[in-house]
Amino acid sequence: MNRTMLALFTGSALALGGGAVLAQSQADHSAHSAHAEHTPQVHAIHAAVAAPDRPAEARALDEGRKPAEVLAFLGLKPGMAAADLIPGEGYWSEIMAHVVAPSGSVAALQPQQFRGGEAADAAWNALSERAPGVSLVHYPFEAFTYQASSFDFAIMSLNYHDLYWVSEQYSVPFTDPDTFVAALYTSMKLGGIVGIIDHTGAPGDTREGVDKTHRIDPAVVRADFERAGFVLADQSDLLANPDDDLSVSVFAPGIRGNTDRFVMKFVKPAAD
Image (cartoon, rainbow, N blue to C red; front, side, top):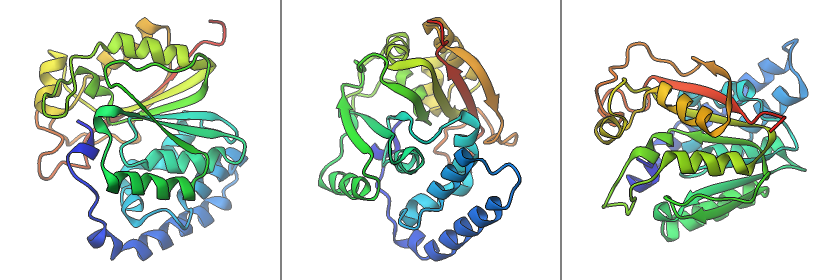
């Protein structure tokens, strides 16, 4: 389920440690700058994560999400046209906008059902001022579509499983994942990259498992994308947690924020 709809960032407690987090982020960037493999791409990613105007609430998530490592693995580069699918509060959107700037762009594609109120609008306006390359676009959750051959790169973090979720409370109807992935395939340029990050789930009935735990079997995701024509280029255990109990909800105390997560890199073949 989309975290935006469950709770808003409180910020106050996290802000107390914001200075320490910022200092650590900047120190990590400085240390990485001296590394022999500090390519322009990697430099842009680390500089984006270390940007001094990122909110403390977002910085507090960096340790668990490893944004610099994940984006370098997936292959985000300056100048790309990128998409952030179901972006929540825009954690990935903001970082990516700094990476692809000044010639690139980020479309934050948010379902209409997850559209927030005035506070959410204000937060997105502030984000857009910090990262001018970001545009917020709303679409019906169950009917995603976008102009063909628009994106070099797309990311969907901790939300792909929601395509198998139905919620009367949040006005999310039955959705066909194959239709979504097919539309995403159309929206990607030849050679375009799609990164999927999600909570690892056990094999079994996918919709039942998502409803109970908000997890998904990585094999289901791979099969969905390959049916649409994508190729699995690589996968990573950067966010793995072998101690996670896959039978419990991702919102359970003690595991929330520390679930076992898979990272998959799909590519739309250059010869479509």
